[in-house]
Image 1 (spheres, rainbow, N blue to C red):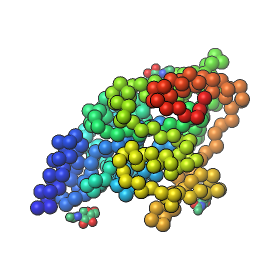
Image 2 (image 1 turned 120 degrees about the horizontal axis):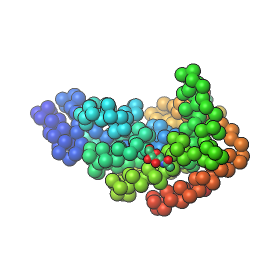
Image 3 (image 1 turned 90 degrees about the horizontal axis):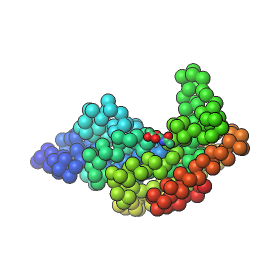
Image 4 (image 1 turned 180 degrees about the vertical axis):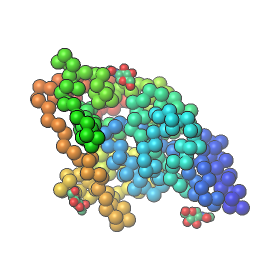
Length: 285
Ligand SMILES: *[C@@H]1O[C@H](CO)[C@@H](O)[C@H](O)[C@H]1NC(C)=O
Ligand SMILES: *[C@@H]1O[C@H](CO)[C@@H](O)[C@H](O)[C@H]1NC(C)=O
Ligand SMILES: *[C@@H]1O[C@H](CO)[C@@H](O)[C@H](O)[C@H]1NC(C)=O
């Protein structure tokens, strides 16, 4: 009887547009995500998914699956994608995050093909800070691979002007990427999270996410405590405390003030366009 029930769950899930793989023939199933954190890279996606996981009605994939942006994964099909998800109980939301989804042009249509009703979370932060953080990550990756990192200024400027073709700059031109997503999904499919505010005041941002996802309010002040040494909030759940990985708090490179100003000036217009597109302003200029 239970077996029949769980197959029924799977069957219903398939007909409603979300494949579930039966794990345990009773009730634990691996379902396709109904919520995706699509980006942005270095915007705070790890913090967001960890904080969302504090909610008991949420299960999150541990790794970035890169299903929609890597052809080698996409070709393995939705059944494979579901098999990468943690087991979920009926009523729990499955969430996956791969920040490269936001900037990869073939992704929106592929996501829509999986489920046009999927809910999309986009966490953004000051695009200039994001460029510096993006560069810092690549810099450390190169050091680890014993490759010589290129200096930021050489990447950032071409003939004295900001180089929009430099990937870290391109990824921060949010309106270009968002326009592509909005050609595929209505604005109501998206919830924007302010990554700078998430660091300062995690609770308020997470309550906004709970409302958007229709989750009962559960995340509370008790889930956060400020670590003075680190200078940011750590998480507490069922008496366990954990802070995000060290690399998340790495120092940014120093740029000469005139180059930094050039970068700020460069983003002024793209930022206006993004605010207009999403109908919301953020406190970056
Ligand atoms: C369903 O799974 C939960 C947790 O995995 C377990 O506690 C429960 O007993 C299971 N229900 C049935 C009917 O097996
Ligand atoms: C940013 O990159 C995308 C491809 O990922 C490209 O289509 C677009 O033209 C680039 N924008 C700029 C300003 O270089
Ligand atoms: C606070 O951060 C420091 C430095 O990373 C760490 O050693 C310490 O364990 C943290 N304390 C708590 C209570 O999380």
